[in-house]
Length: 412
Image (cartoon, rainbow, N blue to C red):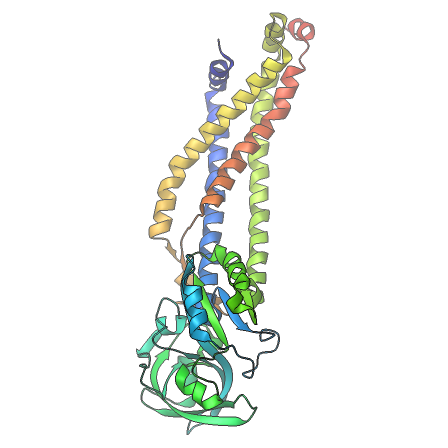
């Protein structure tokens, strides 16, 4: 009889114990898939949301701008550089923007805040979170040089409604104080208090004229990519392009270090949780295999006396561990596939716990819990659990191979 067939039959000699152990592997798969899937979903949403709030997944900016932001530091030849970036396969979009600080004034009061000057022909709800969250009015048109879209809390503080005027004051490229008039065309509500109380969108052409930029100058190019995991690759591609020699190119990890740090911390906690789950699964498999080996010690003594080699006996027990892992993973897949399908398309609404919107480090997160698994995550989970099953079976297999035939037969 072949070892493979014998191992399969041995596995079902204790059906209840085998099923319980296989179920523990399945449960480990369920937990690993849920934790990893939730992490992949939330991290991607956080990164994409952060990218759409101004800096992009990759940022092209003036040298040293990130260390000491200043409107004097700017990049030129914006249009040609944007077209070069858009030609890259993984790039979804690229927009030219001017980021700066300003004092917003109405007849009621003055409030310090920040602005992003944008080209309305390049911006939309997909690449700009503020446009996506407009709750009143609309984005200013291309020919509207005095339009402004402001946060809901900022509008409330300044007592502004749609159509009302405000004055924003900033500094130009010479360091001189400059002011301009704007009229509210839209109000957004991201759900992040700090953003809604201080941020505004302005027409880039109007801001360029006000602060002394030419029509082909901006403080940065925000690059959005189809898969945030490719941010470093896109950054490297842009850096190598001769058109960007006099610029600084940063991935989102460099332009948003606080977000990157929080994600890394959260990932570490996730890894620790999964490590303990792996230990429990391994302990369960080891216990089952070791009990099986000890129960059959006399049988092993007989087969060794009849001519089976210790190596073949080792292979037999390892094959039992192999089939136990296969059964456990199959049960896990039967349970996890419908669960993942539900969580991928529908998810669980956590708004009752967090409110309609909540943020993580100043980045808006949708309170709907869903699962997303990258292909490498699926491979890692399946390969990891399968490897743990084989590792857990190695000691019992070694123990079986070390059986002394004479002593085992005497014990009968």
